[in-house]
Amino acid sequence: MTRGGIGAARVGKALGLVPRQVRLAARTGLLAQHQDGTFDADAVARAAADPGPFLTALQREEPLTATEAAQRLGISRERFRRVARAAGLAVVDRVRVSRYGRDLEVRYYRTADVDTLHPHIAADRELREAARTVSRSLAAAKAAATRAHNRERAHHARSYLATLSPDQQTDPADAIAFACALARLHGTAPARLRRFMADPRVRDIAEIADQCRFKPEEIAELLTAAAPRAIAALRALARPHRVWATLGVPAEDIAHRVPSIDHHISVDLLHELATDPPRWLLELHADRELEHASAAVTRWLDREWHAQQRRAEAVCRAAEAVIDQLADDAVAELFALPVEVIVELRPRSNKWTTAYVEELLHTRPLWLRSLALAHAEIARRAAARTRREAARTQRRLNWRRTWARALSVPLDTVPDTVERPTPAALHTAQTDPPPWARPH
Image 1 (tube, one colour):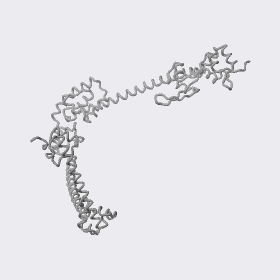
Image 2: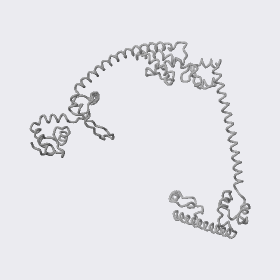
Image 3: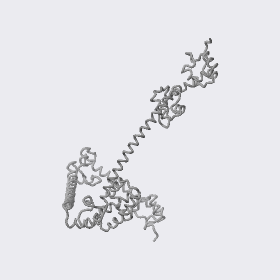
């Protein structure tokens, strides 16, 4: 017996296997493998001498995904997973893959184990067929009960709808609501009734009519009979503004208390309410008057409060102006300097505010420590003002020169108050010259 081992490449060449199949044969024990990874030469020779049984056994060890196993068994993947779960089919390998931005787990099953599922598949098919049979029988019983319930419901709905059908004594609003409900159910409505289709009463009556399970021709017949009476009833309706003008309350406040359609009520009912107002109408009048009185009082109180606020704010501003500002002699006394010097040392605001004086007392700048330093500060400020004025004069002179060159006019004609010569301003002036740049 040969004791030497051979490599995987030679095994694959001898048996006609790819490397994956060689590794599968080693993992499943179909080919003996030494500790160094080589294969037993005698086992390879026996397999090569009679490759049929070896390849059959190797094929039974092939791992299959759920999709491949379902195709092998001729069933759907969902049924395979259900049967495999019920049969406790072992998973020989799990691989994590990332597809379409998701992490998925691919399970592999042994081919020989997959082939053992045929009885389970047949049992599952019979069980589901029996379940469908039972479900159909239950569904038939349920459908019969539902049909009986619907017939009873339709009978009661038709009886109730018959009580809503208008006659000669029916209020015009009720007649119009009934016809609009039938039109809503039919899908078409006369043009003069379309404005009332959105009323909640129409929707409620249409739901009752829908429960009657009328055939389309029955609905059309009912609508044909109800529409003329509803159109004639339009002349007996009072519009919402007329209701408000007559009763003194908005029409929407009484719409839920009397027969109405889109806040319209019958003229006869309006006259009855105006002649002999019921208790609830008097209460609505009282509530309305109370709201008006409360609103008037609230507006008066708001005006008074705002006026008081404005007066208080004016007093506070005057007090703050008095308290926040110090006189020159008071500041001169604080810093022990002559009043005329303090006048020259005023800030740019020309006011000695309390906060500014407190800051000066805290920091005590040099120009407030002696009379000589104060005079030096006055001289410095005068020199700075002179420099600023000179710079301003020179800047405005340069502006005038730029304007004169841009508009080709003498320098003397350019006024001292001319604005800064920006590119946009120059372009505008060249397009539409100012009066001082136009020829006389």
